[in-house]
Amino acid sequence: MRLPAALLTLTLFALARGQATAAWSNLHVANGVAISSVGNVGKTICYHEAGQLHAWSAVTREWRVTTVGSSAIRVFNDCLVAVGAAGITAFSSYRGRFESLPVSASALVLNPASNTNDSVVLVLDGTQLHAFSAFVGTWTTRSVGAAFHSAVQRHVALIADSNVLSGYDAETGQWLDLVLPTSATALQLSCDGTAAMAFSNGGVHAFSGNARTWSTARLPAAATFVRGDDWGLWFDANRMLGYSSLQNRFTAFAGGASTAVANDLFALATTTTDSVAFSAITGAFTRVAAAGATLTAGTSVALLADAQGLHAYSAVNDRVATQVVATTSQGAAGTIAFARPAATGHPMLFSGLTGIWHPAPASALPIDPAMTTTSAALLTNTGLLAFAARSGTFVPLARPGLAFTSNTASAPLLAFDATHLFAFDSRSARWQTITRSGTSTPQVQIWRTAALVIDGGSAFGFGAQGGTWSQQTLPGPIMGIRANSESCRVISGNELLVFSALPEVIPFAQFPEFRRVQPRNGNLRIVLPVPATALAVLGVGRLATSPVPVPGLGELLLDAVGLVTVPVPSTPTGEPARMVFTLPSAPPLVGLEVGLQAVVLRNGQAPWLTAASTVLLL
Image 1 (spheres, rainbow, N blue to C red):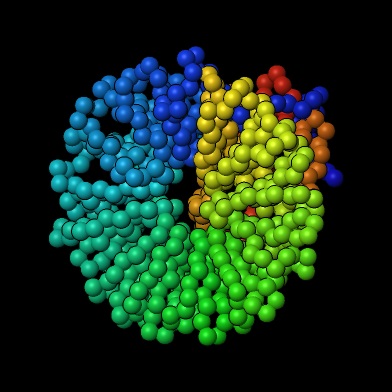
Image 2 (tube, helix red, strand yellow):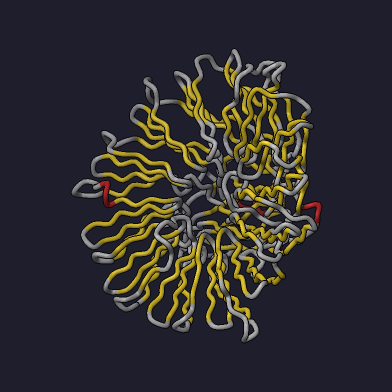
């Protein structure tokens, strides 16, 4: 195998493999960790005591500390804010830094208390509106009128101030104005995912946080409105109108609907004759089944049963795959669905990524599989079969005495026997294993993309986006554990142990493991925490069929054929490097999964290869 020139150059420096930033970190608390002082959501974990706020980022894998006094602290998936008498301080998990802002005592955080997944934070101080982006890590300020109103959720915010609408996206941390006719009035604002929408005088103005553009359309008369993360749907008895912020366009449907059911990435509307889906990913309407069909739905897939059979729908590619068969059971989760025909009871799996049904091998037992967002586990007489949604393949794990665990809202699929822990990497369709440290039944928590296992004297972490295990010795008895969407924490006496479930190369997009989708006609944004004065090269290509050992570096997880290398911009301050690639809208890119892996050379150390992450272009 021939390595790309950039990797070969760095290999010449390698006398021994360098040391990457550890996935586990520790905060020592002299007086013992108080569970009530710990905050943790998503990528952000904090500890507040004696006026000191410690914040940890799963992106940078580092702790930071600042003085905030007796502040009120809000922790979000990608950031936190502390509001006190001296002002407001925000922490970005992507930047790994605090950013303070002087405000008056009357300053108010506008994000609803129930919002914990927002990457945009709005703070109103008199006539000054401050917006903080977790992705950028900085504040932006603008003046607003006394009668303005706002909405904020996830990755977008929206304000209506007189006849001016303005949309804010977390990816750039900037506002984009739309000036309406002076007679127009924004009556309703709605934000979620990357889609912000304002209704005004029979029309709708939609802001795409991906494309940073405004679009306008006329609404159906007396329209009913439903929405999900990145889409909106309006309908009456004669017409439907759908908006996709991922595709940045409105799409009209000639027929009307009586009802519509909202899912994360699609809607399912009932017309007089049909069940019609609208996909946020493609921005298209698709007839799926007859009106009144029985629905079983996941994040991006649905099963509909009618007199003609069982119809599997994929919002990823608008495909409908029909099985003319009666079933005893069925289910859906994320990008996976299953059904068991009544005649045989033998499972068949539908992948929302391939868009087709995949019959299970004969070795699978006639019982319901356990599903994750990207895989499924099927029992056999000798162990397990893991189904990978990306490839439609079944991968055996033949071990006696296996137990396994998963949940339909999360990506990790874990198994264990007397001697080893196993996790299924659905991206590469491989089981990843690590030796156990205990003999009794391990304690397991799984949430979204992170998995935490307490076994003997060790804590084990696994992240579905990086596909690797990491082990940490426990300092003493466990007081509490928690798995978040991209991090985990363990409390043991005076120690707060935290684990990053993220790979070192971090794309903003997370789908299919989690929510955020990467449209092929948008900007691909990547963050790579590079130590100050370090040198790094990013490799972009396809995942390799199997890892290739590279002496002194680790394992090359990308296929060397067609591999492209890009220098990573230097970061003299030690902040994560940020890279933006503009993607074309070429149809052949749809469904292409791009692998990302970097080689890093830290000053005074040998280089190392990071874990690989992937981005699915849709």
